[in-house]
Image (cartoon, rainbow, N blue to C red; front, side):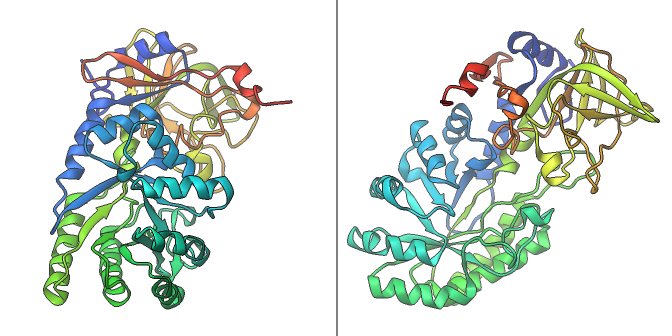
Length: 431
């Protein structure tokens, strides 16, 4: 049976089965791919131990969190609510690290303190966060982590660069001495230093960041036993893109951490926190063709899922592979075919927005992509949709309902892991 692409076990007939049982649009995730990806990450070379933390913001659906944790990954939460979701999924608080822009006040402060007492790691990201939590941490002898803003970063777009001075994440290098002096006055210790410079950095930029981070740790963090290099491992969603090589990055980090030990006598445990690299190519969005239009010389395929199930093209100009599957289950075209079809069309959704397109240029205009010409009732599958699709889509725009999520299990069975939302649920809190 032919698969959609070289790195999935998903077949066209599985697409048809999911569409018929759960309707469209629907998110479909490949369990076998996720298990293989987790195993590969846990084999990343390291000097004195490694922790892989899954960046929950990529996709926080409970069943997926449990699956990844069961494979050996721990959790990186970007909000207190994400940390609570992981806890509600049965993940021990000792396996969760919280790195957030939020300031802990009121009920949030109470919840945060309880979770820290139960083992959750808190990563301080601002001077105010440190000032608010220092007495509590010191009185309970809870060591902290610190996210450092290095002043340099990298990203496929400016919106995904989290290290340059136009980004506000972490305590800036110019404030490190102030932060460390304050922490010392309160009796607070930092056992981990953390950085995350952005998404999609090239290997040379990763190497530079590893070197910079170790030099900052050596100078300012005498008690640190762990170093987190953050996430941002690039995944190749479409042909021609080059994915990051975690094994090569790990080998470089291993060499530099061993050199650090030789120089200082200190052994550092290593952490990374991938999200996209874990989830992106495990996920697909199955849409059904509901109409076709032509304006001038441009062809448009209107699907029943667009920006409300995948806003990445609109937000970032991101590209996704398309697969056309007939209503009978034949794979008519794949983005990974050696020979591309001569037919070209822009894949758009049903939202009342010109930006509701699954492929856009830098000016925000819909781009035509090669694909087999589908008919109404056929399916267009959007690949590379496991990360930052269901988690960040504006799914209730135009009062559309949130799409269901389904797991394609290793035995070929389909398992619903989130039901389709109803219109009644959208308006449930309205008064």
